[in-house]
Image (cartoon, rainbow, N blue to C red; front, side, top):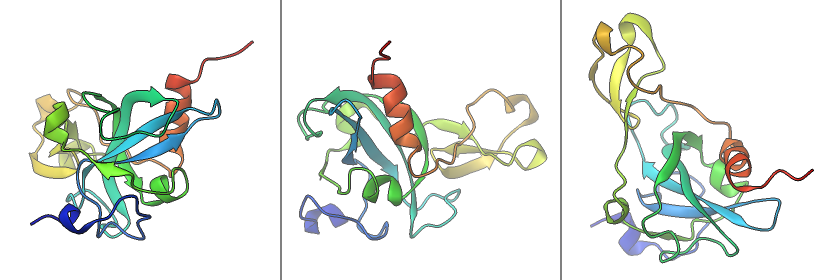
Length: 164
């Protein structure tokens, strides 16, 4: 049984305890539209503060209304990173719902740990898989750690037209 069977949406998370892969929240934009953040992993080995941080990202989606289970269907991920719970609570405020990641073909990407050098690891999202071979250095994107408002800045850059 998953946590989401007991969760009533929307809810304002106070920690990662009730977070599940597939949950989503609204990212408000200055043009009165919305982007969408999505949780991909909770509790990965590379996540520094498991009670407050999670691995997620920004969907390739924007709309006039906050995201819904139906409106985000088939939207892919634009960017991925480790985020603090404030990325939800300080921006959109609430988890609005949950849509299974596999329904949209989303799975954690292969990344390289941010350690670099001889300590570098191959990751599945934010979870360590194995040590990286020297010939894999630079072959994969590096796991990013985002400030709480970074997802909003990415969304503005992607979805808000530049006016003259």
